[in-house]
Amino acid sequence: MGSVKDLIKDDPVTGKLYVPASARDFGRAVWKVSGRFSVGDLKNLIPDTNIKDKAEALTMMTARFFEYLREERPFTETCYIGVLNHDGKIVSTEELMDNGERSNLIVMKLAHVPETYSGGDLNYYRKAMASGELLCGVADVESIFRKGLPLGSSFFKDVFNAFGKRMGGYYEKLSTYSETVDQLDFIRDLVKANGIDEYPNLEKVLSRFGLTEIPNPGLVLTDIIYDTTTKFEAAGDRKIDAEEARLYSGLSEKGYTEWATSVFPQLARDQIKFCKDRGILNIDGKAECVAYKGGPIVTDFACTVDENRLMIVVDHENEKLAIPSNKEIQRAIFRREGIYVAINDAKEAAKSDGDINKWKDYVPEILESRNIDIKAVSEHSCNLMADAIGEVANRLLGRKVFDAKPIESWVGEFLPYASKIEYQH
Image: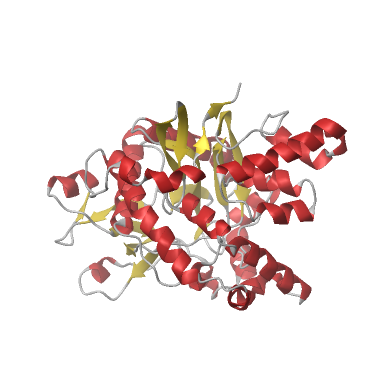
């Protein structure tokens, strides 16, 4: 599970529900969700800063989506069981809200991960999955969907990288919509002057999304675009092709085909529709699965502000703007304060010293040398997030569960990081 979820084994109440997974079958467990956050794969390097109401919001919005999925797609198997109420009973979100309660305790089927099965040895874990030694393990694969290209999308990073390392590094200094568009205009002028044939890497980036020109942030795509990355690698998520994904997933040929061509694409469409029906623009997200006896079963969280870009659409000066929530604005704030540049430099230093996997060891010294107070940056971004998360959660839950301030009272600081919505023709 992710960095905001803590498995509970020893608690006198919730610990009684714990059943360990075996190599062949699921266990069961309660996870306590926190208000922690992770940006830029920094995780433990970020001070222990919590976002108000985030723990309960994450728990209840993902639970609500899985309950929706249970109704709409009863043949789609998931690891979700329910949430715990104040009496320690497993209930639905409707039951919880009907009693005026909130919860940050979620009950899910438990499968193995590298730490529990092989002591963190990823190569052994992958081999055990592939050989059938391990028949109940979380796949070393994250499946990603994109229905749009908002500010902060990796698409724009790829556009800059297509013009070389220097331009790619410059992108890490851009944080606002206007800054990004100014530099995209510069790139567009280069392409116009020299012809796109001079930039074959750019053509590859655009063609993946069915584009012939570089858009501004905020384009909503006609079709959903899919990507796949690893999940457990120490250096962070790495894009992989279908062959690697099949190998690392632990799924059978039939199981992988089912996941890649049916289960995951439908799951993406369901997440987008679930949010749209509740006034939220779900512009990209991800899903993960357990390889259970060769077949895929949906696991981890889905359709939350941590796993997805869930955006609030507002009218501003006769334009429709998509306001980011949680990580999107946090990434922008971190980029604005120079933390992403520091991360890039840390990776370069680690690579130069022979082991890029150890790049996180270099980050604290680089931040200190640049007089960047990551605690202060973290706290400011968390304060911005609380009302945005509350607003999104209330909409997805269909009730005012969280005491979020009116949008107009806090949206001002978000506007520089909003995306202007356009639709692909």
